[in-house]
Image 1 (cartoon, rainbow, N blue to C red):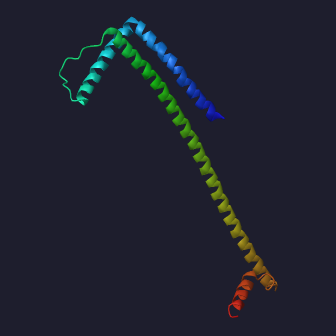
Image 2 (cartoon, rainbow, N blue to C red):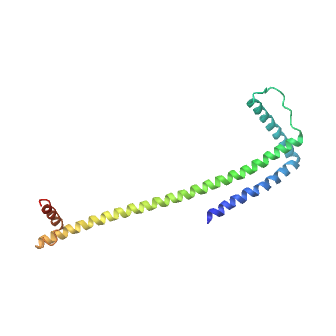
Image 3 (cartoon, one colour):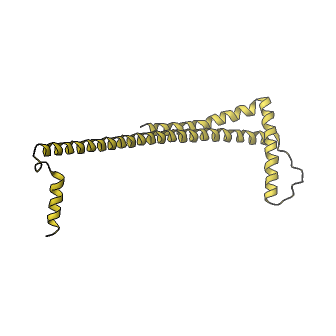
Length: 169
């Protein structure tokens, strides 16, 4: 029951993060100081990606790269911020799921260890009980011999004599 609710919760969180990212993008484009910051960010991103593309395609990298106009820079920066926000939310959901799963596995492993310990303890208890019963049988045999009832409680020798008589025949 818990698993579907958690999965549904992470899906709702991912779905709600997209409109939040759009709202963040809108606010980022309107605020004057933040607008200048994201324009600088977008221009730096444009220069880096353009240089990387030129290197990948073996074009000249020493040419001047024209900056983006202000509206394109703002649009590129807010798109980057929006995608980063959605990625951050999705990453946090994945980390949450992994941690929850690992805690569940740790609990299962602890339960298995406890069950194994209980089985080992039971095995030890049964071994002690068998040993105690063996000693009691020996005591009974000794008491029977002392009272002259040796043939009545002579279990071990009766089996070995039967085996001896079965071999020669």
